[in-house]
Amino acid sequence: MTIKIIPPDNSLKIESAAESYNHNLIAAGQVIKSQMRSGDFFARIADDGFWVCLQGNIEDAEKTSSRFTKSLSTITDRNVKENKGFSFLIGLSEWSSNIDPVAWVCQIDSQYFGQDA
Image 1 (cartoon, rainbow, N blue to C red):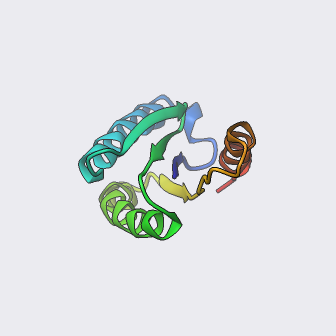
Image 2 (image 1 turned 90 degrees about the vertical axis):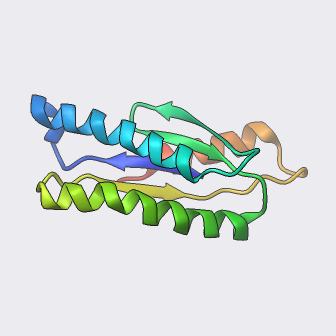
């Protein structure tokens, strides 16, 4: 699962928006950590998001994505109230033993870095 923070257009050019962006990134990391199960792990994979590795299949990831979305909504709700417009984009990907790991990571990178809000 990838979780990408999406700032409002051109907002990072404004210093106060960049500070809010960093605050939201930290808050997202705390939400992810609080929602994970034992054996799962996550890492920050780019300036704007996280890679969450879950044990299970794509159906498990979809359930987890729903749980994460609900928890992340507290951040987006606050942003709406403060008129900052930040949002989160969640992508899912499943690895199996017949998939080349390098190709799988390339697929995730393409999905993650190719997405626009």
